[in-house]
Image 1: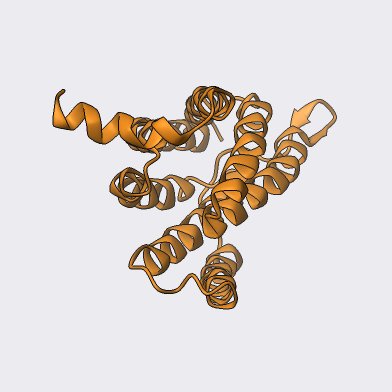
Image 2: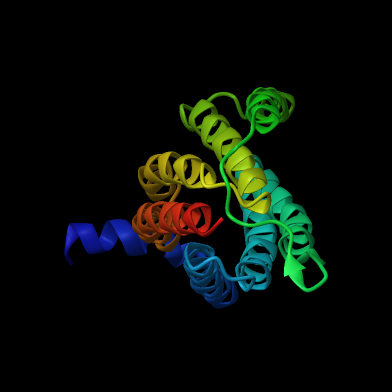
Length: 210
């Protein structure tokens, strides 16, 4: 059999049909969520919540604590983002696509450092700081923590955090044996690049209108 095919399929030989099916559903919902984010559609949140809820189960079962924590955080932030995006006053949406202000930049730095310390501490407590994947996972988790918060705040910069984290996650998930998820992050990267471009166009258009 083709060695590349073996590389992708071999890890799934030990998985149950249920878990493989769940990962497939999570991948599809995750891709839909990022696509809706690109289009600035509120559907980003319900589809994302389905995906993250499944990953919370799968990753906790696999003992991948950094990934588990980030998906649990995604779920919570999706609730916040759903509320934030839909806030209106006299029929007008209050929060449009925008750039970060000075306060949000400071909070982003604080959240990144806090996330690094927290996830790194969890790995240390669980005795999982013995693999090269631990510091990489900690770094990408911090990137995604900030990116998710900025997306919930409808800030253009969140795409930059997604792109960097997605690129790193492609080989990371391959190494962890989650080939479907690795492929998902490849698609995420492509969509995120176009999402960044599209959000900038919307932002510039809104400024010209104002």
